[in-house]
Amino acid sequence: MAGWTEVSRYIRQIDPEGHLLTLHTAGQLPSRACTSDPSVVDFEMLQTGHGMHEVIAPTGEQIDTALQSKPPVPVIDGEPAYENLDGKIPADVCRAVFWVCMARGAAGHSYGANGIWQVNNPGQPYGMSPLGHNWGTILWSDAMKLPGSAQVALGKKLLTQYEWWRFEPHAEWAVYAQPGNPFGPQAFGMPGGVRVIYVPKAAAISVRNLDPQAKYRALYFDPLTGAKTELGAVRADAAGAWTCPPPEKCEHDWVIVLEIEAY
Image 1 (tube, rainbow, N blue to C red):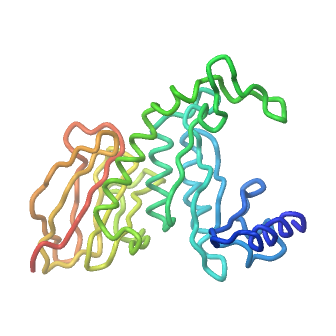
Image 2: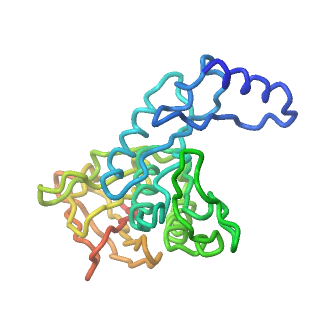
């Protein structure tokens, strides 16, 4: 900790541009826990779990914990599950981690893929890591075409149509219509403005805390293809709830966007 604190202070002294500074974490700690002077860290960089679907929910919990630390600073998952790491992690995990991080209040997101971080070139692979493990041999020129990067980019394209930096987590806005799925919808947005709800399963949800007097414009977004489908106008019941089914023939995760259209 003392060593990296010294390095961080030195970088601040010699950097004429005042770039933002953070630390790659040790294990799964937030950046400020890895320095004896938290003021040298401008934003928390997390390294969350590399794994399959079991890492998605814990990734959201790490975002929650980092955002609760004081004083508050922006939080970004700088090393989430890397696509194709060990030839295993699929695009749907990388895609879900992106949506979960953004819904839980992250200030941005990093996508990673095996082969890119290693810079595996033809005839010149990265080889063994210092700990003696080879994480895969896919070339960077092939890894850059893995589907997860395109799917994360589609999510970014949707969010940047709105004032996404003003969005806040609102877990109370949505639950599954039928209980039994432990990892529920991830809702975020602005009260009285746009709501974005990421649904990990092809299941109906109950959208809560809507204004019964308002007419909402509803839009399905396919996180795999970027396709949008208008649902038309919807209204909540007297209790402010609306049951939303998944898109027709949907067999994977999905997104619903709601905006107030009129009163």
